[in-house]
Length: 282
View 1 (spheres, rainbow, N blue to C red):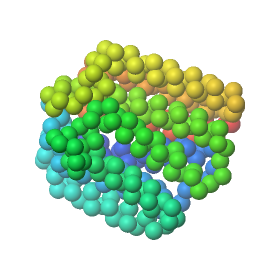
View 2: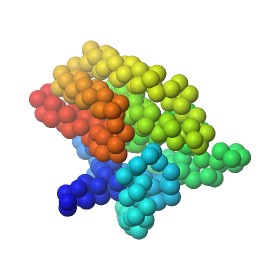
View 3: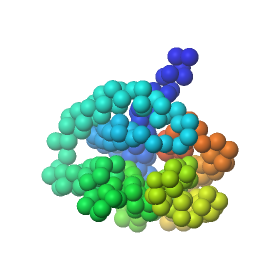
View 4: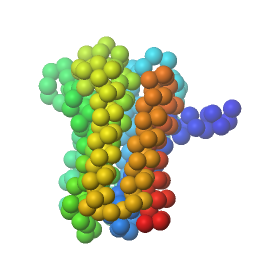
């Protein structure tokens, strides 16, 4: 019983996805053969993710039918508030360790993340970014890609062509994960009249698109290997693709919070772990 409460807390409080964000940042450094960032950097990434997601679920009141996460969130508003405050605290603790040029970029990214959940856009009834279906998935995917690819290495010397491969692959990978969540929310989004990509093309075509994009990810990994031969990285990416395909099949049978939050989101952490393990033998 205590174990169930523990993993519910880790998943539903967004601690797990915050760990995933840090892991992807560390994966990026490994892919470039660069040293890890300092402690303040990872505090910022963890804190920003924790604050954003807890703020989002602090105000969210609609989810898929029988959502354990929504029920947990409604019972634990104070926990979401405390973790939001903790996330802001970590941001403030680490914020002033960055260079001046980062302030504008970080504030811009934070503003976009805020506008995703809160109705401050001056466009009639649709005043949140998430109310614009296609913009929703592009925004989330791009934010995750910028934070976990560009942000960790922008102050370090890196190979430009390798950066383009890593950035493109991360964008494709995160797009697939976001699309799977849109597939899950398809009925709720239809009810809310949010025309996400999944709503527009339907569930079957959305699953097909996710598979095509994973194949594209694999092809990009092969092309990257041709120009930057890192056998361990190639193996890690193929294992990541295989695990994601397995989880996609699981989502077709159940829309459980645990499959999505531990399984689909967990693909980020798994990929980072695989890259770390296989990079040891490069």
